[in-house]
Image (tube, rainbow, N blue to C red; front, side, top):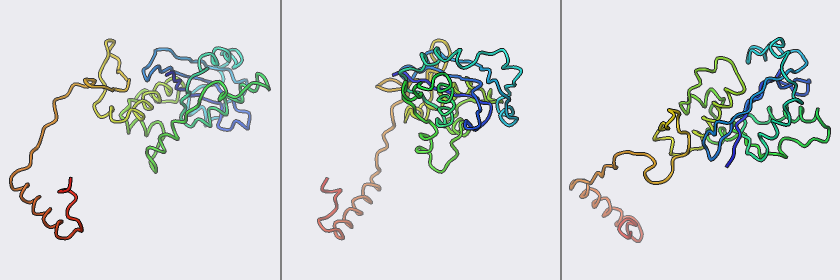
Length: 236
């Protein structure tokens, strides 16, 4: 199973106002494990950056002046994501910008959804935690994912953090037992399955006392008298 966790930074919020992508970051997961492969690019947008957007990501027009344009990296980007499940937080935003960039290359260029399957992790979070905050920062706190390096938004860093959040959010009960370290000292983010996956002492068996058993029988006697057909507990 190949998944790509992706994030972008842009010159502004509205694609309809001609805003452009200025950074793409994506990390690869293979069978729910970090493969070590990633895609990252800063892009020259050939336009000004909204002050509000600059406050979020800190990427200036001067910094991006010598960076490639989208058409320079489009082929490598599409090859990296093709055939994968693309995981994006608030996918509609990023996909709209990516589709616009692809459309600028070729009016007949297919949308991003034609080369990969897209999953919105924000929608997953809202289904799992209705009525709660489900921003990336809120999910980091909920799933105890370290985001201390996130002083500004950055596409690659946010993609790496989202990958850890996504694995925790979709890992089920395996997350209750924590994460072990692999030989390189990195957290093993795979989903733990199968016997012996986590070493822990056997569960303690707590047996009922004689007083508790007597009280239980008295309750069943009461149910026998009040319920038609008697207590279902005695029938089982």
